Length: 430
Ligand code: UD1
Image 1: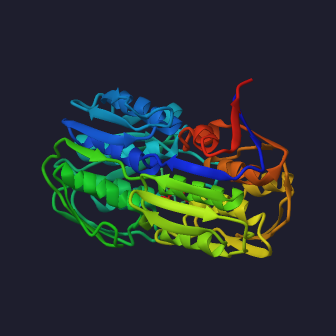
Image 2: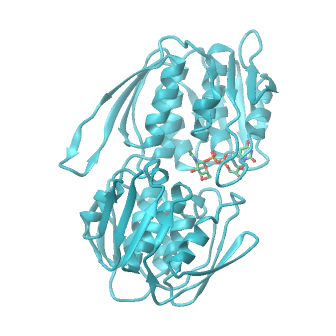
Image 3: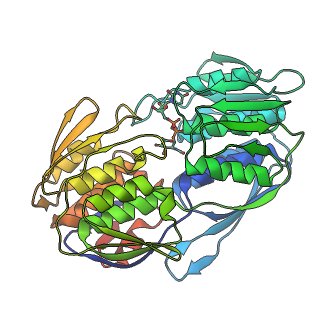
């Protein structure tokens, strides 16, 4: 199994190209099941989760072709992928496939809307909490679906004439349930109004693509989304938006290691709250014509308190990385997680590098230390794993991160992107 070896101490200087967003690519790919025409997605990142979803969509009958194009020598593959689901050959998403990636549960929306039925395995628990599916079930029921849970599967059936537009207000903001209800409602009879909807940029990106396919969605990016159902959707061509989590992660890596880096092909407006926190920690951040420049020279890292929140708040997916940065601050910071109940597994691993962190409920108190020391650590989940890389960049000596498959789920060519900026990071295959 691969591991990542980091020798800390080097500053970062150069350019890092930002990939297309994993969390936008996944729902966009799933939206291709809504039409018998071809959906072409550009800027699709090359990640384990994307490959897994390609297998899942294939199981439903999607014909998928990939045009790999080397955009810049050795740096990043932005792929254009064509999805054609002429016929849906199976409305069942089996446990073996869904259990590997929670987002694959989202096929329930398009399958139900297009075929009138879906049988999708419950995703099961995951490392960062219980992550139930009650909001999906309530929301689809509001569109007229009958749903029963049997033998670990959600069996959903639409009324004879198809789903019916309805009103549903989420009791809690859910990105995934917003994606699914928006997709399902595109083909419903009548108008659907979703209240307290997620406002994440990936929801806006999905709505934009669905509208290009002929859907009638308005209000995306606000907490009320209105979807007027249409008879059918057509194909379209859409470019996946930049990955704001990858952007924030590298910005924090530069803030940690020091240096001067341009993050290319991204947009600061996708992560204002996180960039503001990094600025307060002492880095200078400015816009370039195609991205963001981040500089930290000399000055130490200042302690900053953060609380995770749905967009436009501080993203939970950057919480672990920010904690990594705060381990070296010159004081005490508090990091509060409000989205997932068990998203502090990185604390123990950061402690192995010498970080001083104590937990009280959903808040971590981080007392900055003047030095971290490299050690063997384990990647526990996707975002936690990259916080260890960030800490490793500033640790003395060697940090060896195992269980790298967690990293490969969401970060394209991480070691290559960091190495090109002067970091000492390499993949070791046993
Ligand atoms: C998405 C992102 C993930 C990010 C998360 C929150 C993708 C592929 N994943 O995950 O990276 O961390 O948003 O920004 O886009 N909940 C319920 N019942 C439900 C659904 C969710 O209680 O039916 C809860 C969850 O347990 C969690 C909270 O709602 O506590 C938010 O989860 P949600 O926004 O749905 O996360 P995902 O869409 O799974």
